[in-house]
Image 1 (spheres, rainbow, N blue to C red):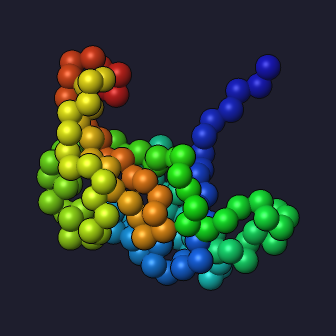
Image 2 (cartoon, rainbow, N blue to C red):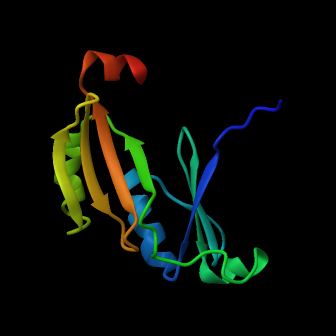
Length: 134
């Protein structure tokens, strides 16, 4: 049996510049643009790929739609979610949940990107959660 690793998540968007700029801001990471239709924000643990609607032609008609996600949450481990909340409020008005400590030990901030995708910034605060992410 082979093993696999998640290396990239790809978001399809109708507005490349807006979405790439947003993710550059929230991650404090400059995107690498391969073409005007494809950019990547490379982080330590994975790459967030962003593709235009035109890239869907390579996969087949109707395989994806921009700005329609209602089931996926993109999660980022951050050092201090409360401090990040101050910064994120300057970047979006789409705050879904202010920093809240969850029963499983993470302090979590939920907000939406410009296409409506749900983003979770979280910081482990319980001993068990801190151990998990150590």
